Image 1 (tube, rainbow, N blue to C red):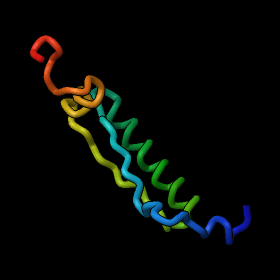
Image 2 (image 1 turned 180 degrees about the vertical axis):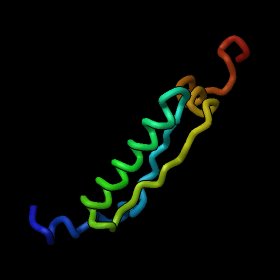
Image 3 (image 1 turned 60 degrees about the vertical axis):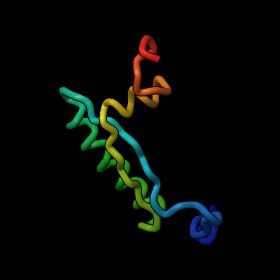
Image 4 (image 1 turned 135 degrees about the horizontal axis):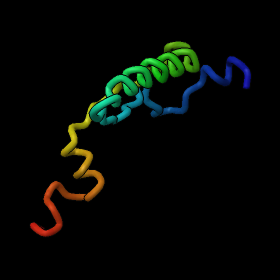
Length: 77
């Protein structure tokens, strides 16, 4: 793929990509901090600064809701 092909971006493709994440406990925050730096730099280099990652930290409750499809325990529904 030549430079001119890399420069083109399909119509409607966002400049910022939203990446939801959950830091966790213990070594989680340290691992996530390094992971974010690594991925930010990789995207910056690959897209020559034209695209960025937008990090969205999800609280634990939102993760449970996404996994279960509801914020209420099944026995309460």
